[in-house]
Image (cartoon, rainbow, N blue to C red; front, top):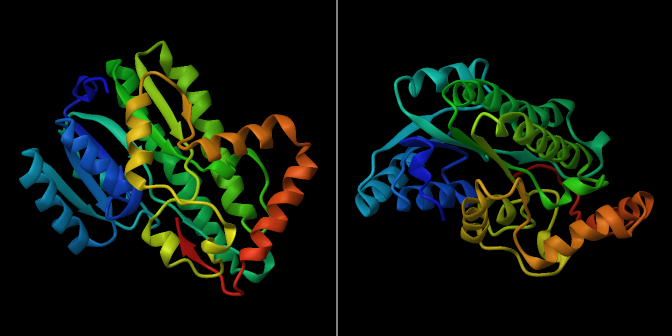
Length: 271
């Protein structure tokens, strides 16, 4: 891994209280970066901040914030004003499983907001500063299902496809300005969201789930070297099949059959 401190002294991680976000925070701190932890649960953030600071000797700030609240990114920007922010990890996300028309429209709009619009806002707010000073890095968390439309996770998959497209395009735009963009697309990962998912039983999908530490490690190891990474051989193979080997209609049919078998009748969950 390169010296991440070359980007700046501080890293912001959204969705930092558990799962992949927590691993990003811990590994960034282990690399010597000060971290700003962003999530809704203040108690979890404070506990993690004390643990990270004690273990790695870095500064660890917490911002208890609902990113779906109006003006959330403006508030975050104010909280980190004056810090040398070098890396932003846009990890927070939610999803709703099941037939789209069975879900509340408000819930699906929250998916679009948190999973797509918030990464856009983070990219615009912090990317502008990165480009101006000609250093910085943005990490966007997409999904291995971004390569294909996915029935019963239709809106979530579409949002993650947007994140992948956004990151790849911004990487080209910002490369000349010395700013790195990486999109990481994990498959099913051992997180609280996976364990507590409502509406879908991920154990019925078969196959092993990924360690969130591996997802964060793969992303940080490739930051500045690649634009898009997919952790895990199985996920890489599924991506290749979805993009190049299967007609799009076949990919949609395959995902529809797979996801349908795992539905439990309820809806809602955290990514």
